[in-house]
Image (cartoon, rainbow, N blue to C red; front, side):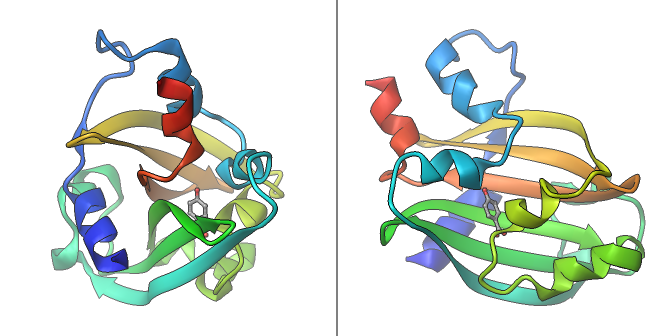
Length: 170
Ligand code: PHB
């Protein structure tokens, strides 16, 4: 299941936020600026994160992601499934250039079951370059390039069918 979700995530097709047909309710989710984990917590008792893959990959394993990140030999990859009350709500893929992993950002390698957002959104040095909506079949996603102390990382998220986002669209 988690591998299927993460394969779909890698196949997302990217759209402009100005693309016609994206409803306000949908954009309200996709362009959420604050922590998605915190938003999910308003819809369930407990959010949990299951790491699927964490480790270094080489530059040649990047997809079109390569164009959005600085040239680096190795990238820290984190792939997770986030659950709301034990239902899979989101697949997440974070790519961190090795050159980002110094100072406090070393923590990005040590998250395990801790949700990334708890770390990102507690940092005073967080900024965002862009958020881009994406779609694959009937599922929505998004990707954002974020910066911690000006050092980039790329976060891609796929909202799975059980996610409360889809309840707001009917
Ligand atoms: C993660 O822990 O990697 C994570 C958590 C929530 C998200 C995305 C990624 O929305």
